[in-house]
Amino acid sequence: MKKLFQKFGLNDKETDTFLKLLELGSQPASVLAKNLEIPRPTVYLILENLQKKSLVEVFPKFDVKYFRTVSPKDLFAVLERQKLEISKTEKILEESLPALESLKNKLSITPKVRFFETAKEIEKIYDTVLKEKSEFRATFNPYFVKKFMPKYFNLIAETLKNNKIPARELLIDCSEAREYFEKFNSKNHQIKILPKRINFPSDTIISGDKIFMIAYNDDEKQISATEILSPPLAQTQKMIFDELWEKD
Image (cartoon, rainbow, N blue to C red):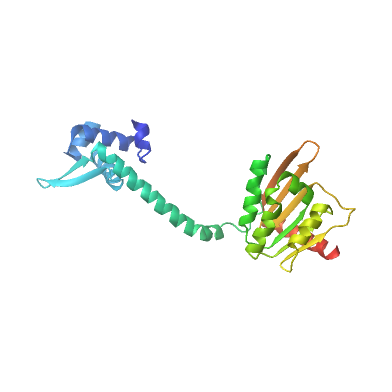
């Protein structure tokens, strides 16, 4: 029974009080305190909390405050009201989240890191990238992207274009790179193909304060990825990318 009332947000004392009041019927706090063997002031505090949760009602009788529980059948309605309040709170939280995020300690340099080891998990990386609105920088190997994650070979570039997000990309030289260049190179999405002497089986995406690194193992048909949230590291990678972009 206590597990049920925990779902309504009740602690053990509140649950015991509700069940005892349900058993006794309408009673003043003094009678309830005597039956529960706890001080009357404590009972008043518990009853006040139960009232706030819409589980107990109060009414006058002979100039004395009486308390009664809601009908057990009405618990469904109480639960629905709580769900509605949660929904409202979630909406307020969603609206307040940017302001809350802005209050976070900007001086913290500890990066937040997440690891992904399957293609299905790594789809989350790409989906996160698609939601980013910051300037996009990437070094990537189109051969591996098209082989391991073909859905995203065009999708990221198309999303960047549709959202008018400035982008620069450095590509490993291969037929897939030339195909990609012909499709997407533009003033807002600038693409360069690296010299043939440069080759690597990985991608690095820098967007906002995040770095996304995807590694490929062609022999074992494996893919893994790392997401790093760190303003200092992201800024460093942006500067390295910009230097490489200008020298190429």
